[in-house]
Picture 1: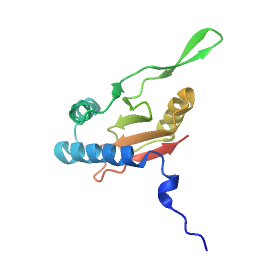
Picture 2 (picture 1 turned 120 degrees about the vertical axis):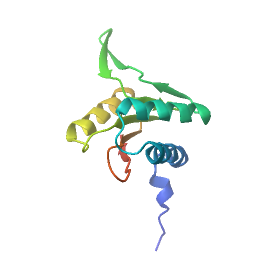
Picture 3 (picture 1 turned 135 degrees about the vertical axis):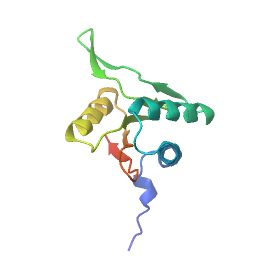
Length: 129
């Protein structure tokens, strides 16, 4: 019987691990009752400190017949690989997943992370394209 290596199926495992460390640190330091902007500001500080290449609130557009269609503005695009959307609400909805899929498909990114800081226990959601 052939053994399957689970790491082969995880998209950007090392980058995801580092990002999750940042998210958990912010969640531990700030708790669950802050506003989304406070979490994104703290995450931005840690991303800069760890020397990540990222863009905050970068508009995602797609060219269509010589025009640009706006697909939205995620909170972060990290290393031009992972799209991160930060939330601070009771629960993640289908619309949040659909929004992330629009982000991913518009620029052909492979991985998106939805992180809801309102939960007692942080559980980042991985969305693969």
